[in-house]
Length: 255
Length: 65
Image (cartoon, one colour):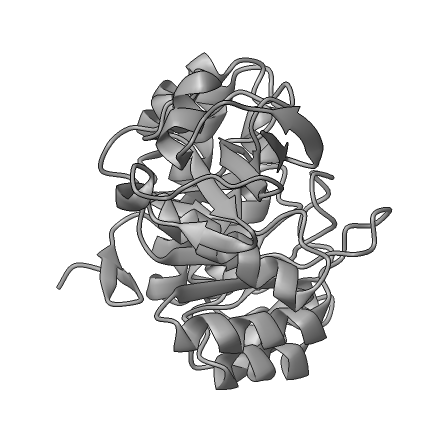
């Protein structure tokens, strides 16, 4: 049977979600999307005429749009943005992102859970961006979240799995897919998250800030696939102590 | 007629949401509209009137993570 990730009733073959922010040129996005083999792509919602160009013309048709609620500081603002995003006619998925801390860009779990509850009742498929906190995750799941998306490190930092232990706890405890979002800067870090049992990784800055975004998108695709395959294969036990354990027979030596 | 668009006072001669978008050279397929805090469905742009003092938000999808 094919190994699919199911989110909100949709089967995804790719476990790499990508973003559309911060590319040297938006012209790169179609090639990045293709090289990543991703099926899910995030976008943000902003006022027109503020110097930001629309991004929809660059997104390959057939990709599932995951609008975020970036800019929201409260649950009410996130709900407002989600409704606007849905009105754009690109589906009912939404990444809830509620942030009032502008220095560290850490998500507000309480407001995120509140927004999740409202939007699930309105029929949205909700993917909340959270700190890797078990209680916040459970509150979001209780409210109907389809997945939880804990941060590996602060947004846009490329610092990797700083919250590894906490993400491991979420993977162990929760019954919904855990999608590692934010902070993953290297394919090896995405691979490690997948080996741990993460359901998927969302990577934007790690790809967009590299020297060759298209090549890096491919590298992330391979890393996520490798990590997933390793998770399914089940890694061998780690031996503690200082002694080695021979891999070759210890008998029959030439003397 | 004076309306507030994206937080700014603007003079407009448009009488509907659709004509406002035309006036501002915006693609109705790419812009989402909120009028007085209520989302306006795209199929209602033509039928949604613009009144003096209306507060409108015109938004679009941009790059983000």
